Image (cartoon, rainbow over all chains, first blue to last red; front, side, top):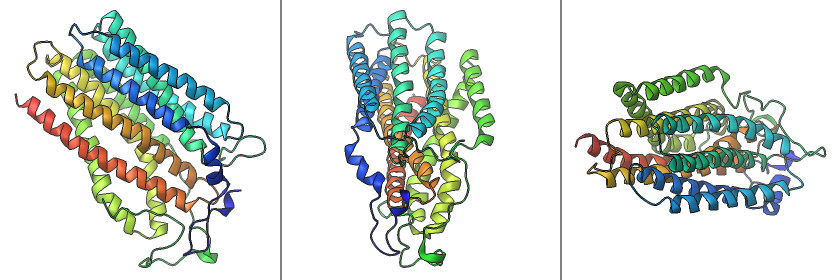
Length: 161
Length: 212
């Protein structure tokens, strides 16, 4: 399946099955990036208004919008039939671990600094969205280029860290 | 950065000094690990140090993690985008593959660690020295740095890291797709260069704030 990737030496590249499948995939990467942008904008707004009596409504709207886009994205992702789910799970699992650690450290900073309740709740929501969205984006970006075997999986045997 | 061409294994460039692989097939890909396990203890030690620095509110430790992490983050991005990228584009195809398989796994560990160090220590440092107070006169500059970091985060997490991982998994295939690797490596190198340039803006702001 993956053997048709190379044209003759010196010739143009030949698209393989994986390339041909790209057009059928939903815009998971783009939606994940939208979620990331909403979370980052919300995080910047919150960080910019720390210790200031600013309204939290913009951050709340951004967090809700980010959550909605993420939910839609997960639904679209779950509806893909032919996909390298094994690879997806492998990358998502490790990335989730890594980004939970990063989000945990940032959450620790906010808790340690006695961030007020409503701000802390919004920061936490943003961090949760961040910690779920980035692994989803990374895992999809890898799995989309992996061949799909009849069993529904295509994880390379030696790809484990 | 304009000459960063990294079409990896489809066709050798005209000035390619190395012989093509036997049989005209794709160049051999060395065995490699996507996540270099030996580096994990170093990452863990740095993150524990970061947590201790935050918990102790030690000014030197916070400055160390923020300035050290930010300096390395900036340097690596600029070096990668402006120096390594163009060089990589001129290497022979086997050399590019060998470089990529040895270099990219390290980036999987290094960059997220540096980002966590810089941002975590930076926020705490700003709070510790009073930069987050309502009365801080240069708050606008601080917000500008947040915006730049936000843009960098979107570029790094939305484009750079996915490209990095996708290249590594492509190289793990029995017959990697050279055109795809070249396309993804371009994304990686260009986005690293863009974030490096944005980092210069951050340095301008940070040195301005530190000198007030």
